[in-house]
Length: 115
Image (tube, rainbow, N blue to C red; front, side, top):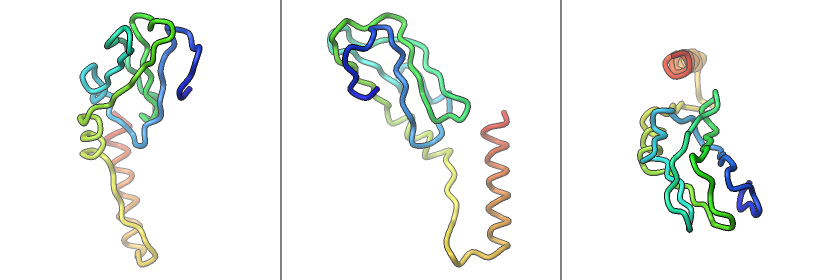
């Protein structure tokens, strides 16, 4: 809940990523949760099966009334950039181009989702 008020102090924080993330890139140094009164919080970080929703469950509750800030460091975005998939598109693609693109998608899926 963006800018939520009155949320229980032990509530998990979830957010949607713009791209699929590698679970190994979400660590306590790349994913920082900070309460303006209680400081940095440790906790469990998980991704959904698609790798597009990250959830942080704090080890300790936040202080009632404090503001929480979640920061993803550059290592997360660098991982998305390094392992993302960019494909050509446009009206000038030939059938042979499309077959090649389909092959790349199958290969990418096998390498990144069928581990």
